[in-house]
Amino acid sequence: MTGAARYTADIPLADATHAAIVHSTIANGRTVSIDTAAAEKAPGVVAVFTAALVRRLSRPRLTALLGPRAAPARGHVLLVGFGQVGFRLARSLRGRGVPVLAVERDPDAPCLRLARAAGIPVAIRRGEDRATLELLGIRQCAVVAAVTSDDLVNVEVGLAASERSPSTPVVLRLGDGEVAAETDSLLHLGKICDAHAIVADTLTYIDFDGSIMNKAEYLRDVTKTSYQADHLYDEGLQVVVYGNAAVVSGIYRETGTSKGKSYLHRVRFTDTWIRQNGVWRCAASQNTLIPNK
Image 1 (spheres, rainbow, N blue to C red):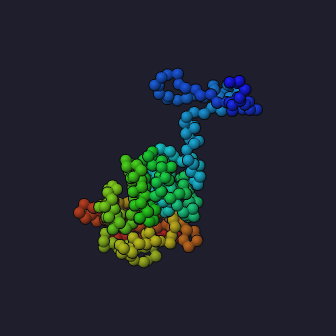
Image 2: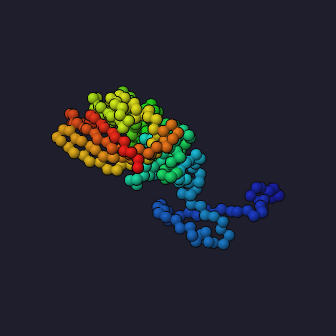
Image 3: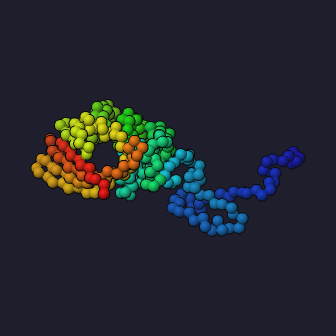
């Protein structure tokens, strides 16, 4: 043993920066807050890192994030699908002060261009992917809402979410009544509220262009319409109840695009609802287009 050997720690490096780890002086104590101001002002200190900052810097990043660059980390609604339904739901939640983090697989989805103006962060990822759900805070979010236009994708999202975080509530958009029934009976993902149930089987729907649709035609038109709405404004409505019947009238204003052209529709509607076996159902709807001034 001559002591002549040199190790890596013995080699001086020019302009080297050294780290010092500071531990709590209280055994088994609970750190409530950390004030780094004094340490940052100390001579020779380049930076101060806390455990929370290190965790934030080292966690996976949302590299494809549209809208606000800061995504909510806790207590948010994880919204899978940013089409017309997803966008309207996100705006409604934001208007009620509920934080939203949306997920959309299609980077060319029409509503994505509205995300920044609406203050809605949108991650470009596949919402049914379990790793994506973990990255987007499935265990910290308040609820997962799968509202894509594909029923089977929404069911897949629900299954993945329930597997990763069984205690997190899941809301699924299911346009097909048979899919909703099978999901309820076979998968037991939660309480099913079938939108078809609020439309009477004998529905008569009169659109503002004069066309008449039955229930099947109306539900098909809602999901396959050529109108891509950007905003929907409710100008107020009135409800008058007559025992087991009710008349709902009001005006709404809608803006969007159709076949590449922008449109503005202001529509007056009158809906007739009936109560059958304790459930209110829409039996008739009349829509009139109000001319733009």
